[in-house]
Length: 254
Image: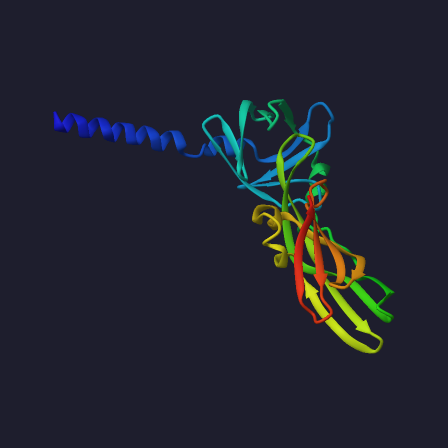
């Protein structure tokens, strides 16, 4: 009876391995450029284990096919039909996306490009102004500096497929002067706001702007904007700089 139990467990284990193993034949059928049937626009190109999107800001993504599902990034899509020239699957909203394999060699040209180019500012953006308080004249400077720090954001294309877009973050410098005397100068990075913004949001956010609000007895009030690129989700964080250089952060709105 013990031998029977062991044999049964082994068979069940084998079935589990088979059911989760990658379908290499299905992956091979998917090689090439695929066109969306309704719009007749290029959806993506499959080469090896990667999917490439025609958008120049989208990163190539590793994919696999297991059983009746198509796995891309952290998402899975149910396959409705697959043949050498057809690929139908359900996207994140449950709609069926119908693709046909292209037989036009020119479609490959859309993918003969440099690696994905991150979206970023092309130059430093500077603002400054003079403010009066307590009979004293103060001058503030803000410089938004593009960096090479990449920020990846998941978005959904027209087919309802999740793709990774890459952006560049900014570093913002604030300098404060009382006449010719420098009171304060510091670079601000988005990581400085980790206590005010959820970590998952912060990972995909960009420090976009730092706007002067007002001056009072506590110091200089600036509002930092942390936003998900190309989205409506933002956090507005007050950045208060005292006259002796202390910095206090406060969440205003999100």
